[in-house]
Length: 178
Length: 150
Image: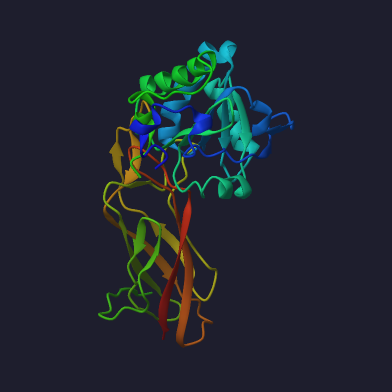
């Protein structure tokens, strides 16, 4: 669990806290065929969502993430949706259009799945700080929209405070019980 | 033409499992040439999970599907059980699912030219399971039935 020892971490910035893992970089294509690397987003807070068109719980979260993209994109925030559909863009593109998804969607593969632990369950969502470190990992729906929002705001605010100082509450709520 | 529904007391193989779904070893199937016989395949899902039915009513959902090789028998018809209609958080309409234990019945036909004796029929059961918080990737369980062609 990434957030074990959370209370002790409250006095440390992310840079000082060895428990923060670097999010594995990847290179995937978006719907326009453009190559996208996670490292392209360094300096931004990223919500990285692994999802699929056949995943019902994923469908619940997508509108939340669309709201976050709209509300926070001007503050250095971005949502990246990585679809794990084996059938590829032929199913993903119509779904993205029907949901009116306003954030960037990429097509995942086995390599990225392996880098992120196999992705045995969807949705799997990570919040990544401006330094590219995993601040929280969320497997399945374990919290609500407000929990995500609070965690995003906390990461965004940490920038202006000069470092990441997690509070005892919000981010821990996102940590999967697994 | 005679139809047999056999429930032999001995299993032909070990239970097959992949993920949260387990298929009980199917009964040995005795079938006469140029006749039909039905085979019941019993599947059991881990508690708390559901799989989409064979007709989930949403193009994006992956249906349960049992397929068989084309030899040595012909699978004339696959009959899925009646699904449950569950109201799930992501869909405005109830979704057609299976939970717990359910049985799929296949009607096989043995060609008149089939060779008498013991043989095997291989199939695949594809499913995609979720609970109310998460979904697992689509998986396939291999199924093998021992045949006694008479």
